[in-house]
Length: 275
Image (cartoon, rainbow, N blue to C red; front, side, top):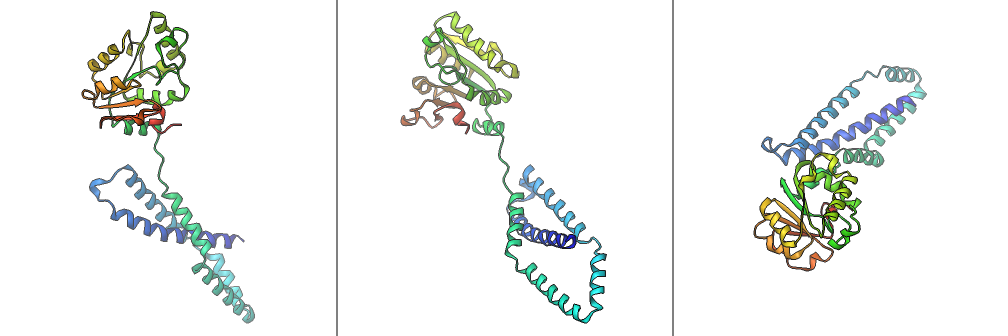
């Protein structure tokens, strides 16, 4: 049983080697040494490891199997049966669809693309922008109107992971129009309770408050961010000439005509592919 299992493993490795030869011939033809990246180098290293492992396994002495064959050769009747058995085994090794399928599955799993992290997605979607301004109502907070802040302020739990990823590599400023000082305190306490300030990327001094919508627009103009995120279509339209990229967050944003540098999404997290 042990010899059979070993032989089966060797056959599988041989098939994997054959499939790898095809895979890497296609891979090497698709790039040159001038455009090697970390994934290409990793693939080459993995291939080298596979070749070494296969070579070492195939060169392992198979003494016990030779001795069994010699003992079988001493009997004329058993030698004929052994020859027939070897012929069947050889044929099954060459024409074994299930073995080929297993080898193909191993190779496909080896070459399965690596899923990007949320941080990588955020950087890619923001086009490596380093400064971001974002309004609070309707984007970070569940409340959508300044009057609601007179009662309470609640951070949307679904946006927290994306927000924290943005603060890791972006200079982020949050801003909102409020009606009184108590509303400011409620917002800051809600952000602090949600852990937004504990990541080190955002401090309370970067949470800005104003008394008018035009005040928020003035903040953005002064800060000159790479990205501005807002729910107010009028502000988005006014800033389109001055800001490199903008994101309009609104359930109905896709029904309006946007400038070429303005993107739309029902929520901030959905813009980055988070449900």
